[in-house]
Length: 327
Ligand code: GLN
Image (tube, rainbow, N blue to C red):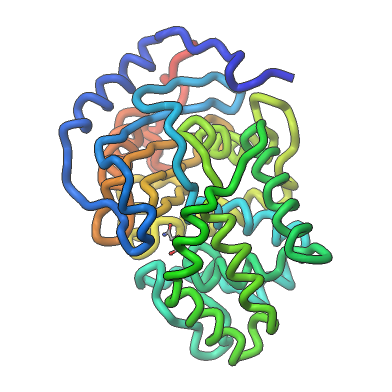
């Protein structure tokens, strides 16, 4: 098995292009860091990194590549995959919908008729999804999540205790959502345990390369292209990518799909992953966020990559994946 660190990353023209993107957007200082989770407000807003991992395991990266940050909502993608494996597609659909909301990620809303949370990429749906992870107790469930992350990134990961406790003690909106779902019987009574696991999954530490390897794993039918290990059952890749495409960028999801056209997911710590099925995973990290909670530089970088290489899924004119160079 190869480690991510063993992969040759000699400077190529593609990496030079990433370097140009990095320098172009490094001076962009629009947006603000997330501060509703007190520990996140302490981040250095200058941090910026871009990493691309191809479906055959080549790595291209620039910027603050080793900086660790909490994964936040990007975790929702992976945990949805595990819940699908645990419960199956039909059962999951009875508990969590697949409709975009057009509302903020932390909106306290459920579908009027079904009482389901709208989708697994917004907080309510993610909390419901996490509550469905199997295990005989809190520790086993956490260990199953950590093991899943390990398969995706190729090494052990850890929960940042400060961010976890920061969110646990201030996450009143998330607690309110859990109570609302309990009221409608959409989540079982152990809501504090489900919330703890949700806060823990969000507080897992990753760097930009880890995110890109995760995205590349999704691009590679659930097999980590660096280690060769299966991270998720390939049956569920289409479910995961569909909800990323329609719901992954919150109330920007429609515009993202229209302009950039790639399944993607963002998190409030500043990460974005984007998946080009069969080709590559893209990750950008920059903590300055727009009003919807998406990384400002991250959106710009993905937009440029999409235009440059014709990555939009429905762009039959520009789509030019063969132009992505060899290392
Ligand atoms: N842990 C964060 C929350 O629940 C995740 C939100 C996000 O990244 N959009 O509010």
